[in-house]
Amino acid sequence: MSLNQQGEVESLYLGRTGVTDTDLRKLATLPRLKQLFLNGTSVTDEGLQHLRVLGQLVYLDLESCDGVSDAGMPHLL
Image 1: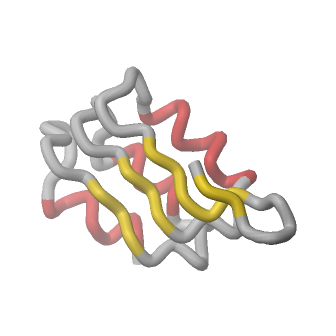
Image 2: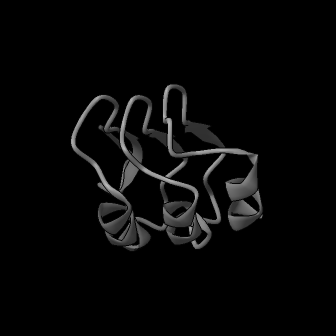
Image 3: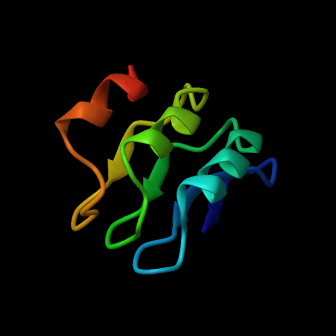
């Protein structure tokens, strides 16, 4: 996790943890988040809809997320 000068979370590594779609809903409280690493988690296409509110997100690592497919990408736009 990295913070900006105001103490707001800008980067969060949750790779290879037990993060689920439900947990992604909680990330909406991090409006300054720019980088999010979810590699190797059990998130799915449906869970990606919770990330739409992260307007400053510029990097999202979904490598080895078996529940994520091309069908989930519109949730991020």
